Amino acid sequence: MDGDEFRRKLRAAWHFLHDELNIARSVSTLYSLKIDDEFNAVALDPESEYKHIYLKAVSRSYYNFLLNDYSIYQFSWSDRYSWRFAYLPNPWIAGVPAAAERIQEWEYLESLGAYDQEEMALLISEMPYYGSIPAIRFEYSVEQYRELAHPAAHFHIGRHADNRWASAKHLNPLTFVMAIMHLTYRDDLA
Image (cartoon, rainbow, N blue to C red; front, side, top):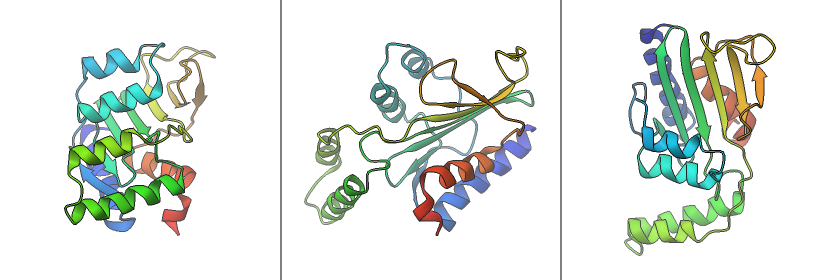
């Protein structure tokens, strides 16, 4: 995949989430994310809890798309031989219908002026931690390929660093989004 195809497929992924499914809240950028050393320090630390990784990404706006349930997508492209996509679900809301309904009620009250953004953030931070949907990454790196140890194209499900699921397909941003939607948001596809 070259840079032009990456950007086309990234725009198509946004269109799919926002215009077709109506589950995307905002777009931060329609370009590849640059390396963020502060995010990486937390994300690559084996002692980090997932909620801290998620909060670091959100606090630094280190994402491309923010969904209605405050889950995020990250897309990075280095060159035609290296790219990374990630889905970071909101650990308090994603996959928990009652929590999502509570957020919708609070957002309605926020729209009426009953809450401001800080009060909303406080309410969300006080919700029970569920972590019901794992983070999912897709990586493609020809340089990191090691036979039987590190496939060039692979998925990471959850946080275990050596948990690599080989893929014969080289996903683009749109196919990654569609796969995540099929796995975690089936009701929104109907």
